[in-house]
Image 1 (cartoon, rainbow, N blue to C red):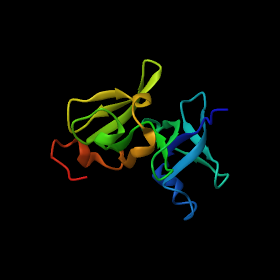
Image 2: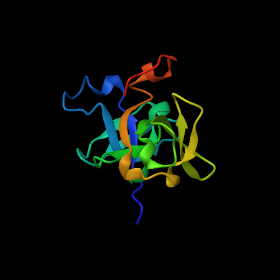
Image 3: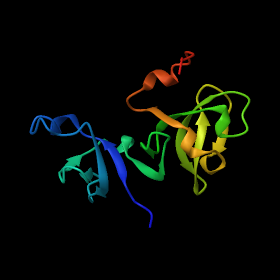
Length: 140
């Protein structure tokens, strides 16, 4: 059975109440009628308010070091993972009923089901790593 997990960046005001509050909550996603978004973290059991724009779903796969892959993650895809001429850095998105890697450092788009997922590695996410989107060439 598929795991329905979501990840969201915890609101800063949550940290004032508890120093053990995680920076990111991973678990069940809830949105109340007013639009307030929360995640009940599966590790801590706590429910935390999260920034709506940062909420992404677990794609049901882990990378080469068994790290869960979520929407908005930045991934390194070595050329050996598919039929590529070079290594690629991509952003994970959901579109047209599939998870895609959209090239950050090149004109590249590919359904993640077309690559050997166990060779890729999560190297960040678009919310904590905006430097990937400044147009500068990055060393990975």
